Image 1 (cartoon, helix red, strand yellow):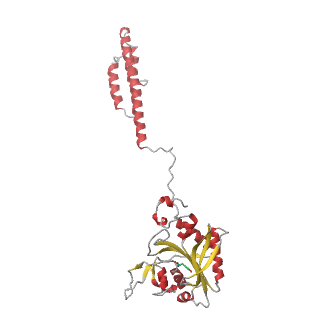
Image 2 (cartoon, protein in one colour; image 1 turned 90 degrees about the vertical axis):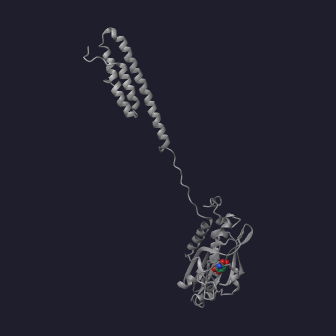
Image 3 (tube, helix red, strand yellow; image 1 turned 135 degrees about the vertical axis):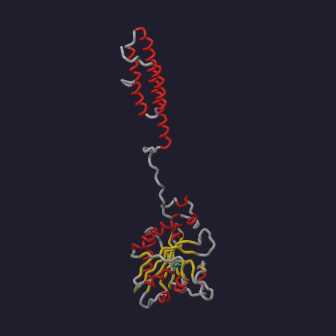
Length: 339
Ligand code: DAH
């Protein structure tokens, strides 16, 4: 016989079910289980108390207590499943799945003009040339005057020029422009340095002309200049042959023809044989005595050679590009093809 009367199974069951609805976590469920169904839990005690009842009450009380316990066990299992499901849903919504493979960041690439310019630079570096750069906004003096192209010289027609409004002279004439070639750097370098000089100058140039498949108003050039005592045309030829063979292959056939540029004498154009055709890839020559003089050099002491080429033209050859306008169109389908 117990002192306290056995508690009513139904009352405990209802209290337990109430509490179970409020238990919202795995920890809360476990605490609830201990409180009602644990070894000394409230429902467990009710069941134990059944043995103490008078025999005629035992059967009904035992059945009621067992049934209540079963209901609690069943409801506990349901609550567990509900809480786990809610947890899984939350994870799916905002958790990071660390087992997924990483996504590679897209790599940038070099522009085909850059690729070719770097290649050209590397070849001339290997022959002892330094690399210099100069301004794209240039004085008439460097772009023309010091290169033996005075005002009203017909050779100015070779260069369709973007003139700038800044720094007009007293008569209203233009004095500044977007450089039409990289050759002004010849004058700048000679003015600022003493021989020996071996330098190449990559950079942007501009011409005021209609655009078509072979003409752009913005393009690159690479200028070359070597000045020293005793430099000859043979040095020019050797240097440019070496360049062409490294750039286009050791068997490349090369052609020199006379050409005219005001800042060289003699002047040549150089072509390479490419898939059965002769293609002109650069202009060159011996630095004109007037150019040496304008820079303050004595042409009886120093001689030099110079050359200028267009990397876009060379890239078009090498990669089979048929329209120079692709270079500045920024179409990734074009740009993605080069690395
Ligand atoms: N500056 C010339 C042009 O834009 C190219 C050139 C020709 C550069 C002969 C040179 C040279 O240095 O010697 O058409």
